[in-house]
Structure formats: C-alpha cells, structure tokens
Length: 201
Figure 1 (cartoon, rainbow, N blue to C red):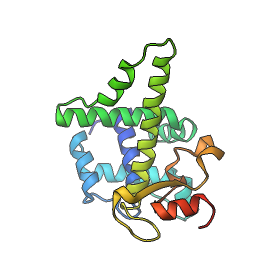
Figure 2: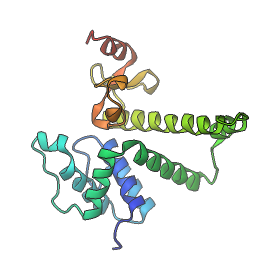
Figure 3: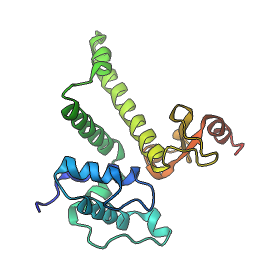
C-alpha cells in the first residue's frame, strides 16, 4: 500500500476529532466511508486514527496510549495542528469542500461568490476572504464537536442539531490558540450553552 499523503492525513485527522471514543474501528461507518474515498481499507484508516491517539496528550492524560506506529509525517501533521490550527483547518475545510464537489459534481461556492462580488473597495477583497475563513473555522469547530458527542447534548442528550451549540470551555475571547482546539469544546443544548457561557453551569 502506498504511503499516506499529507492530504490523506489531514482528512484522517479531521475524522479523528469527529470520532467518539471507542469508535476507532473498521466497521464504524465514517471510517468505512473515508477508506472508500481514499481507496484504502477501513482497517488502515482505523489504525491511522489510533496512531493519532498515541500523539494526543489529552488521551495520554486519560491513560490511553493508542498504537505505537505513528509515522514521521503523522507526528509532523499533529505538531503542525497544535501550533498552526487556523492554517490546517483552512486546509482541511478546503479538502472537504473539494471532496463534496467531486461527489456531487457541483461547486457550491455561492456564499463565497456573493461576498466577493460585492467587494468594490480596495480592502474589501481581504475582508471577504477573512469572512470565508472565519466561517470555515466556525464550521470545523461545530462539526467536530457535535460529531464527537454523537450529536447529543452532553447534559440532556438532546439530539436535535438545530438546538445544539458547540461551546468553548476556555472562552473564545480568552484564548486565541484554543479557539479551534476540538478538545476545548462541549456539545450543549442552547439553554445549557447560555447558562455555561454565563458561568451558571
């Protein structure tokens, strides 16, 4: 089997953060789906997620070791994500968009076009790309937090996505470096999210 490429590892890292604990196995449907899109076996993808587990300090603190076969590139990708989250999230979201476009054969970039088409002032193009990047970052954080909690409020088990929020444990405004850290998130229903945000929970 060919060596894993950077893009493949970024998609695997994304899935790692989306996968609930105990689901890193070859029969878990999202692992099967990613394996199919990468033309790899589900067991290979499951093992790659377990390799990332071995690099995750949060799991190490819980006494979970993962697999010991993490490659040099695995380690580089993990370190890069820890130190340059915004850049890697941009890469991941771009790859996912390309993947969706290939699957649907339709480029759904209407939001980006609307923003850029309205740009007439010298600095507005930079602003437009900033808005698109911010939306990508917010989308990444919400997606990985909700999926890692199996799209259920961790307090009430509410399963309605429209009523769920990806809450930051360390508030957004207090730590720029933790804003996109999936381990800095809780899946809460809207009421509990508001209570948590105000220090009432």
